[in-house]
Length: 356
Image (cartoon, rainbow, N blue to C red; front, side):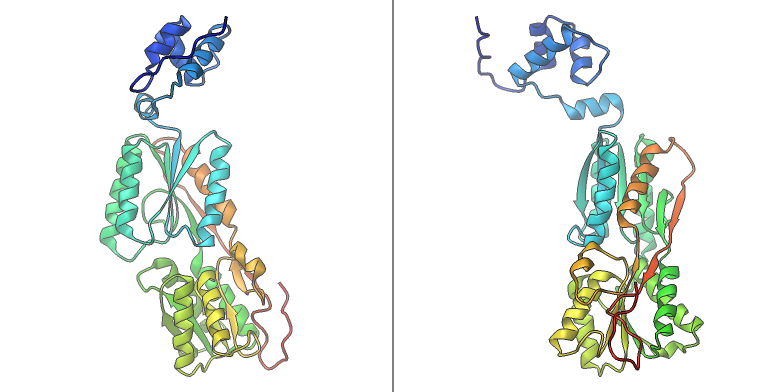
């Protein structure tokens, strides 16, 4: 005789009902449904069959309270539409999936207050770990508030890692932005460029500031005066790069090469130059920073500073999840590699792709 379907009911099925119908104790049913292999057959099979028939769903929030943490890892990024963040997110997810953890991603839209709210939410939900990806701002007040929120999270048993500047007192994957931009500037000066511009991003964003500073230092190392480079600020986005490049053209464009402090700005700048009838690199050379995946389809290929973005995500996740509670924060430094491609050329020569 087949088992009759469970009667309709109101409200969620309780664990006690599953245990009673399976003929086991409450603790045995709990161990089975929490994934423990300590309970053998036939009890394990009976519990799973009854839970399936009744439509039982575990109360994950209650489990998190009982265990002290859930199986959720919070990933907080600045802009989910930016390929830089999506590549890092892929690395974080790969590391977490190997450990049977679930990643919940939130985008702050570059709003520091929203970043604070997301961290507070992850803390309230007892997330296993939080990984924050994105540049710090120059605001000391915002940095202190976020550091305080993260301290509260770790004191309650959570783990934290950042891909950012090491200003929050957490495990950090630190990109050496100044060094990478300095190396790029030297390489461009080596191609003969003597009049350059920087699409500098927002002044309050430390990543943009560091890359701008490093680029000026690199030109100085190559023997160029500080006034050899002209800075144009703008949002850290594709549209920000487009607008900044347009202002550069409107101002006379007395430069041979433009460095955008991230690749998405560089992509926007290239579109703007084309819209103004300029050829790349025949009329203007363009370089970026990050080496995002979408550059693979860009024509001409973009000169940039390459970063191992997926690996950075994996290493940040491992830093957070493998750390012992209360361990001294570790910093992993990542230095980019200059990749000379066809968007830049040696001045005074006919156009030909440079080697990567």
